Length: 106
Image (cartoon, rainbow, N blue to C red; front, top):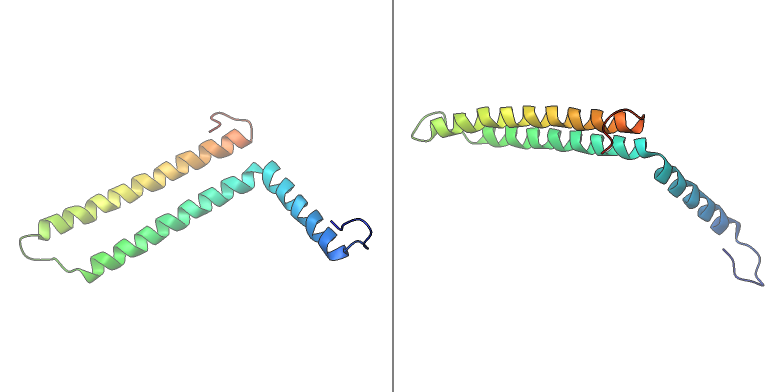
């Protein structure tokens, strides 16, 4: 806000009011934080999938002494990502149920 003796700066006041409204909206609206959390987790899973796909495509270990290890890593990675997605769904559902007053409020 403006200091005493000076005319009020309308732009400064508008920015302060907008910032206060934004803080109030973010603090009171927990579903916005939940959507951001779930969206960030989904993007992270997508990036991990893309990176692992590119790594496995770049490294061709179809024959040789370590071909079995590469196959095991690929199948284990698929299972791990599947469990990660299922866990993400469970945590998201738990959090959303907590917001609406249902069971499980993390």
